[in-house]
Amino acid sequence: YYIYVENTVTHCVSQKTTVTVTENPNPTVTLSDDEICQNEDNNAKITLVPTVSGGIPEYIYKWSDDSTDETLDVVETGIFSVTVTDAKGCKAKSNEAIVTIKPLPTLSVSNKEQSICVSETAIQPIEITATNATVTVENLPEGLVFDNVNLTVTGKPAIGIYDNIIVKAQNECGTKTETISITVNALPVVEITTEEVCEGTNAVLTATAGFASYQWEKVSTTETLTEPSNV
View 1 (cartoon, helix red, strand yellow):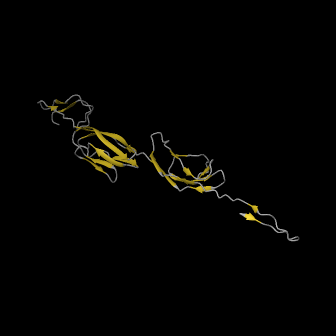
View 2 (cartoon, rainbow, N blue to C red):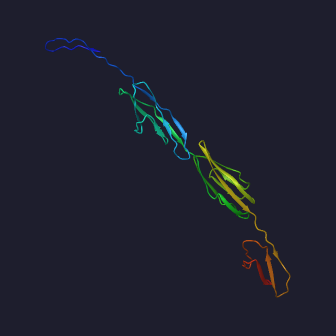
View 3 (cartoon, rainbow, N blue to C red):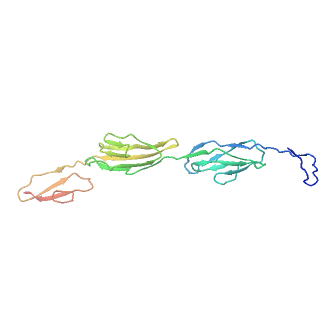
């Protein structure tokens, strides 16, 4: 550009004055979406690194969380952007980047260790609590049923020891497992010895030895029962 000026009194005109205007290009800056699985220590992070071109270095950075480092460490899911200012004060704002920290599965199981007698109606319901996961149950014996809607295991298995029932909660970031152990005990078998006695004398009935407790019909809790022969 150039300019002439004229004095309003003398009408003298100045010599040509030239002015050079330089149009500096704005920088450009882009960010990429990213995702990562959370770790067991719950301290996973993603470092956002902007791609900057054009403009005049050095650059000044201001992120959407007001931090001013060249890169940004992200520890939770969110949307982020950065504004870059070059050495001439020209600015550019990046696109919005989506950062996702994907959670690990969680799993807990109630009543996972049980010992019941075969005559009992059923096991105590086993309740499974899981988040961010698909739940499966492996090695279920016949008589037990897994409800994958309400996440419960119920039923009445046969006599046996079932100590390898595996509950799994899985997602793309990992697997959590719990083991269920159920023992179904057989009923004790008891025999009572009898004898012939004369009328008016006592009869001694003896049950099989070795059990934890005894309960006779007459409410005796000893191993032997003495009653008159006319009982």
